[in-house]
Length: 311
Image 1 (cartoon, rainbow, N blue to C red):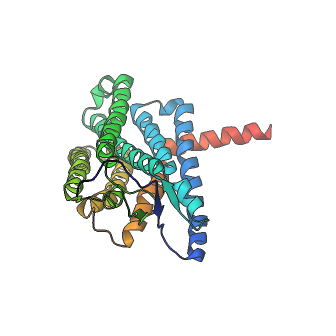
Image 2: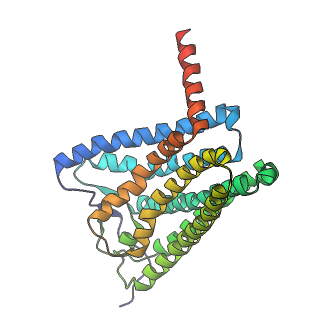
């Protein structure tokens, strides 16, 4: 039977994480703390990097942009999830659902590309130290950030261009706390097999490409660090550990979702929570704990403000 591209679904129902009222209140308390700490932690990193002249380097410029993306990622769905914990009927408008899909894939795509740029920065710093200041200019860093956002937005638009015109004419329950693209596609009143393959290919290519680039980069860097003297490699290894940890935490759930994108288990909801809510908090924690320069700048910033408050 023929169908029109005009959607008759005006809103979607988000089933959330659980039906238990007590558990929802508990999760509201926990995720409220995580959300506030995530926003404050990433904001603090941006402020510290901007205010400390010792952190005026390409690596920290890229790190501050990573923190900005994490702040954006913390806000695309988490505030609504917190509100939905306190209400019985969890709904989102069709436009709001499409906006969530657009924002999520924009931020995720941008962060993937930015992590590749950060790996390139470390590659130049460790493998070509004498040419570092020449190659990693402020202009190149700005270009990296621009490309990251451009790729993220184009990646998201390519998803949204097909999704927004799908015929949604009946089922409107999304078994998640936000509009997850594969779950929304399944609600369309048509055979979505080709659409699912297209979505998997689109997301899989950018994820696999970035992940392979990161694996190759850090493998070369680690080999180079291993060949250097122990005195010069200790600080580099500490910084690399933070970078590699962030990459693993970011791409781990990502790869899992792309291997089984349209076959969801109950544990997938909590992996989605970790990916969208907890990961933005882990980045500032990891970089601040593993980076002596950031720790020193934080102590300096704290002491400065404590002394100013005393007087």
